[in-house]
Image 1: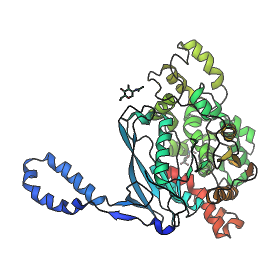
Image 2: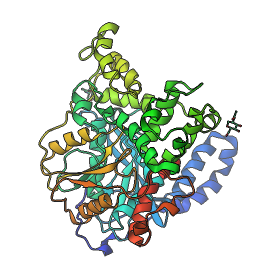
Image 3: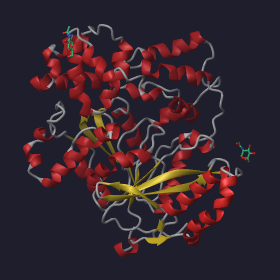
Image 4: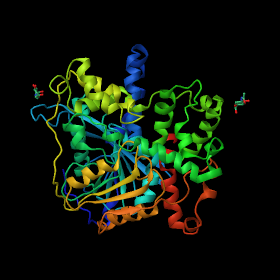
Length: 494
Ligand SMILES: *[C@@H]1O[C@H](CO)[C@@H](O)[C@H](O)[C@H]1NC(C)=O
Ligand SMILES: *[C@@H]1O[C@H](CO)[C@@H](O)[C@H](O)[C@H]1NC(C)=O
């Protein structure tokens, strides 16, 4: 590893391009080997892949970095570069010599000096940061400005490596990327010296790793749904559901779903919609005819949606390897298990999302591969800035508070809105605090609250017409607003 510094001059940031000398001979090799290939077809395959790899991979490296990057496209007018990074296959076992590789990606900020990398860890757990940067990196760039490169990674790309199985190992992996690129900031909570950690949504790490899974994650799920109805009623004619009723309580109690069952409505359709507000108008426009007895439009829009991705095999695998599982932590008979989980499941109308997780944890056979448990009282050179929505259907404020309390000196910013993460809807106030933190290393004096800008229920196609006047008239504000407005939409649909 090499020296890294955020104080190098921009001139230092110029890449040096290297092409392996043998690349120039690859064409020659193909011609020479032609007779052999005719008689031995399997050679074709390996030769073609070698040939294209050699010609496609122009390596670029930068002073103060050890990573060799290749160009992998553009987003808006920002170059993207990609690399593979090698890490130990088991960080918790020094005698295991195995290694694994994971892909990393970087969106280059236009005036970022060497070492000004913002590492974005998309959470999930286990979601791909490659996808994240490709689809939504341009919006992060608008939000944080040109003084940072945006770096991310796919934390669990190769099933055969042990290190992908548990989150603590992926955190160590991301710390390695951080140190090799001289990265400035992180979005997860593993302690580091120097960098500015930033958390934009927060699950309770203490419950996640060291206690039985609780329903804390769902603390505000029902409240977010009530918020959907309240905001709809407040939006009046702008929300199609008001054709059914202008009373929030009447809408909440309505069970006139016809042929759609509870799971098909609340779990498969409404729950995912609670995270991304860009879809609230669409949801209301399909629920309105449904509740009036015509399910055609609802089926046309949502028939393809099956259970929300929170219940994929990968998700269970990661959750089970991270947390406490098996006979040592769970009663093994059905009666006792039910006794423990039924009260939890009654707590939320969305709770059945978590149901199967309990049975899987009870029966999980793979031994835990890490001794990790989170710490309290983690002191950092620059304490973290924690941003959260007032009502987030999966990472509630109460979990953000547990993170705030774990880091002395940290500051929490609550956006008085709904949805998953601070980018669920536009809030110029939160964007301003974020920029000050990243660019000047300055936290707000106190914990803060921020308001949301602009309306929530907007018909597709009317988005620009609904931008508030004070935002529209200021170019900087307009750009920030649009980046936050489009962030989730582009991430989900992009
Ligand atoms: C550590 O790695 C070595 C070498 O691969 C292996 O033999 C050993 O079982 C591992 N220990 C644990 C606790 O996984
Ligand atoms: C139900 O809605 C569809 C789509 O809007 C419409 O074509 C159809 O005529 C409606 N059916 C009834 C019985 O109103």
